[in-house]
Structure formats: structure tokens, C-alpha cells
Image: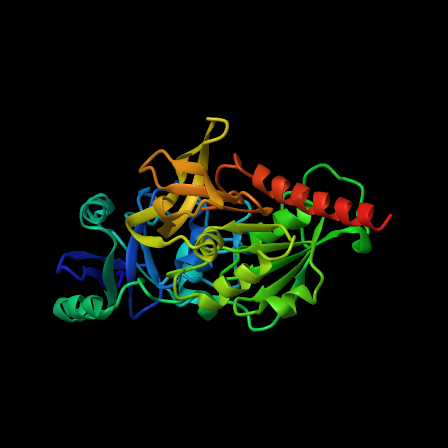
Length: 385
């Protein structure tokens, strides 16, 4: 069967010709490149990729098919997928379907057979661009370029509330690949974490559960008073898509939490919202960080960690107030990767310590969050003794 023709058009007029490997139709978004060698299914289902077309720099994508266990959310959030080569057959004992079928079921427009190295060089030189993938027997390349130009870009776009849940729910499921059995923790003895869903990934929730937490996931626009009524031991601020600055509802809530003694932990967008709540500013990066091989230095110890990254915005370190200090910095471009409050048990990390798959170097940050909650609980118990 002859594959359906497809084109990828950039807003600057550049055209890449290939063939369709997903759903029929057209899609627009900001095209970014990801350097990870594995994890295409987790990337596609990461809500942080909403309104983004992902190009994967590794040439052979689809080798291991797709399996429900590797979903980071209930659906595919990426606006489109761009790859060099789709293997004829997938080989993996866990696979239930090939990547192409997974894309078709998710109604994701995707293109293969293009020079992804050339595309990546273009994005590195010119920055992330608006783009359009168009499929069909009769392709109109001029129309594809025009459609790409109409996409407004992610600057100023609040997507956290668009991908967030509508109602709160409980999460208690641990990691798919369990560690050696530990003694069960009774429900009433477990630390209670309220996690804001700005586009939360399942593996974050799994790791919180692994550390003995019961988790209540709440919508992005939940106010501080209703969250405090849940009597949490700590507040988690999740990853998510889009520009953090328009998320004024989240910034206000965090400012209210900072007036309490509750520990706060933010990842990715949550890290940026912590910075904004403190009075810092965020900036749109040229092409962002997307991959699983990014070196980050811990400024306190000097140690270097390999991390998973996925963000197009960053907190401007030069705007941090005196009440907040930098803790981690990217060794690729020097951008801020971590922050902590001097007078409050609150900290954030720009990368993804919960990476699955990916480096596990900084999963210790979940342990730190756990310790902060336990320390607070101990103080409360001592005060009432």
C-alpha cells in the first residue's frame, strides 16, 4: 500500500516532503526537537507538549511499538510528530500495537521520511517555529505555509487550564516496576499531598505514592482556600504546557501558600510559577530544552547530574529576589534549573526528575520533599505534646 504523501511547512516558508504515518488531516503548532533516544510514547502523551509538533532527532522511531503502561496521560497531547524513519516491524514483548496504529487511534497527524537533522539545525539557528503538517493526495504547500504562519506561538498562551482536569481525584498507584516490597503504610498514616494538575504526568504521581504519600490531584484553577480545606501536608506544583505568566490564578494561589508553613515542590511549569510568585520573571527560550541527556550542576555540591528536560520557558535568574536563591544550573546554556526559598520550605526544579524513561539522577528531590513534610509534621506533633 502506497503511503499517503505529507509535508511539513515552517512559517518561514521551508518545506519538508515525506509521507503520513498517523491520522489523515492537517495540524499546526510550534515545532520543537527532542534529542531523547527512547520514550516516544511518553513524549507524545506528556501534556507539556500541547500545541507543539515534536520532531525526534533519533532516526528510528517506533522500534518498540506502543503499550498502555507507558502512557503519561489518558491521551496524546502533542499536536503532531515528525520522524526520519518508521521501522517496518516493532519488536517488544510488551507492545500491543505499532506506533502508526497508536497515532491513528489518537488522531495525531504525523510525518516520516524527512531529513530531521536539517530540520533540527534550522530550529537551532532560527529558534522554535510555527509549523503545519499537511497530509493528502493533493497537497497545497502554499496553504500549509500560510496555516503555519497563522499559528500565534506559545508566548502569552495559557494552556495549563486547558489540559487540566475538571474535578479532583485521588491517586494511590505506585510505580509500574515495583521496588522490593516494603511494609504497607496505613492510609491514615500516610502524608497527604495535594498536587496541582497543570498537565501532570502519571510517573510523578507514581513516585509520590512510592514515597508513601496519598495524593489528591486538583484542577489548575483551584484556589488556595479550597486546597487548604483538604488539610495537606505538602503542595505539589506540576509540569504543564504554555507560557507560565498568564497563569495568574496559580501564581496567586502559590503566594497564599507561601504565607503558611506548608512545603511546596514545583517541577517544570510548577517551578516557573514558584519563581513568578516570588517576584521573578520568565523568558521564552530560543528553542528550549527537550531531551534526556541534559547536564545540570548542583550549585551547592558541585556535582553534575544528567537530566530529562522539556520546557520552552525559563525563570530569569537575574530577576530572583533576595528571598530566593539558585540551586541548579544548566551546563548547556547556563539557564536556571533549580531554586529554593530561604525562609520557606519551598523549592522547584526545571527539569523532570521523575523521568520515565530517562535519567533517575535527581529522584532524590522527591525524597527531599518527603523530608520537608515529615519535619513539619514532627514540629506539629511536638507542639501538641
